[in-house]
Length: 440
Image (cartoon, rainbow, N blue to C red):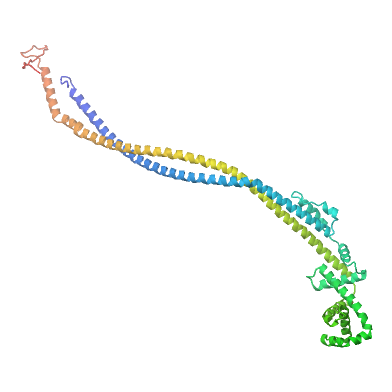
């Protein structure tokens, strides 16, 4: 198709071949870049596939964990539900206990107030302890529990009402001396023991009547002598002991010698004591102070017990309220963990599909990589075996041929006459070849 009669036809062909070679080289570079890109795509798809595989494994673990959390939340909800159902019964039972405790405490307090001389029975009956008002009651009573020495003395003398005032004074003085000698001895015990000494003194005084009877002394002279020797006392003292023993048992005074000795000792204590009003005042003052302190301490102890009861009750109320609140929250938690589990199942299914897709993508990227490698090699072969050979041939043997053809064409164009032509004229020559017929 090369028009050798047209100037530049061969040059245009050379330019076209140059363009073809440049394009082929660009195609080689592009195929190489494409192969590099598809290799990177293949490797990245492998990373994607592995990553999605790890994601799938993690999603399955999350699914297992979500199932366990949901099961635990459901168990927690059921357990708290059981506890919450018992809350009304617990609250009602605790309230009954509190009411019973306060009723018992009220009875005991009224008894203490009356027995302590702080209130009359009518006044004490007006005192009632309730969960809401017991604190105010004890605040009022803390100032009322004050026992005066005069109240103590009146109470002590009332317990000694069988005695004369003088005998009461002596008894209370002896009681003071006993308590001064023994700090652990209580006032009531001291007064009781002092009253016993006073009684023994009376017994001894009555028994001494026989000492004025010489006949009696003669009759018991041998026992008196024996007591004097065995007890190591003088005869007058022995006579007193035998007289008391005789008063205790006239039929067998010898069996009462020991008791008689104790009674005489007690009588001696009484006879050796003088009533002292200052000691009586000190005794009553000390007892009043101790009684006041003990009374307040007793009230404080009762209040402390009631405080503990109310702490228990309020704690139980808070506990049941907390259980009810926790049960309400556990229901939301159980529903939330159920939704989480369902969501995780959807996630697992989605990631499973993603993994399947990434596997296909990885396989396809491998096929693409192989295809681009074949394309790269094919383009190189196309250049080496096609374009390069064509260019080399054109620039080699074909170039010489084209040069000769152009020379022949130039000679043909200058050959205008077979037989000759005049100057200034133009002409043309055609050669006709006759060949055998062309048959099919």
